[in-house]
Length: 356
Image 1: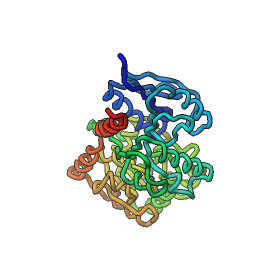
Image 2 (image 1 turned 135 degrees about the vertical axis):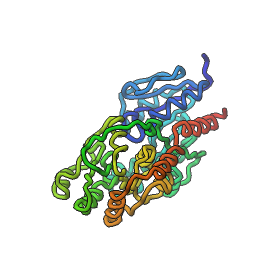
Image 3 (image 1 turned 180 degrees about the vertical axis):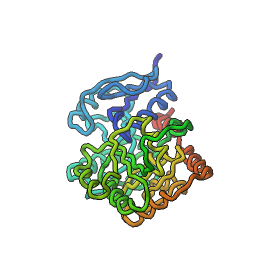
Image 4 (image 1 turned 120 degrees about the horizontal axis):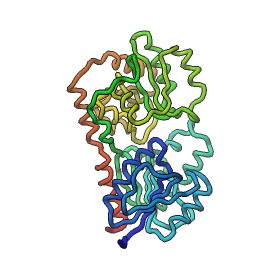
């Protein structure tokens, strides 16, 4: 078959959390919806999904944020009509049209958390993206507003393409708990802006008033050091870190939690609260714009800068009893966000970018 357009997609971050989920669920849907395109999927290792018939895989050795990627990716994309990057790093040595997805601008918004070198790199790349991109996708209205505030107005069309909740999270079968105690659950890599230390301190402040434990699920290596020693002093035997859970274990942990706690100081979107709502699990979340944008009144909120506000929220969750109507309201809210809808919005923008 002779394809009218050939596009490259940078899939090197497919095994990372967050952006990896985005790539895994969205890219195959978009490719299948664009049979008139041929897609070259670029990655460091084989992809965790079956390649549609109008796509092929090219293995590269350069890693994200490296200098060598600027040379290798520019070489790989020669002769194509466009490159889609699901992040903000674009080739500097190529004039191929670029579509990019911006998930957040945390490096610019949180200068006290990210080091000087990372901030300067992000600021430079965002400025290049603002000037050179043909299309920019934002995962929320909040992320777009932050980009405008901290980077400037993009010189190209922009689209809001919210993330989706996989149908996996809505499945109803009963699953036994991974733990033999009631618990609050926090999910995600333990990066500083995830505010996990504050959560641990708040939990320690109410541990004597409820039977619950605090479970932290997510990668901690490379993000927080010394936190385990802090736990021993805060609430001995009541705070647990699982490390990375597989998909089935994670859903099991979310489904059986008394609530999912999402204490982040800053997010672009915030997918874990929506996935918890899909399970019918109560959500206690930071009162920040992107979470309000997605969860609306289906979640309970607290001030992430106030330990007392978080303590009060945990006690409210500890006192919750089963409420079938509230559970269904949570699931209805999550159902508004699907990967099929995200793909439809993205495909429409891609067609517009190429005049189809």
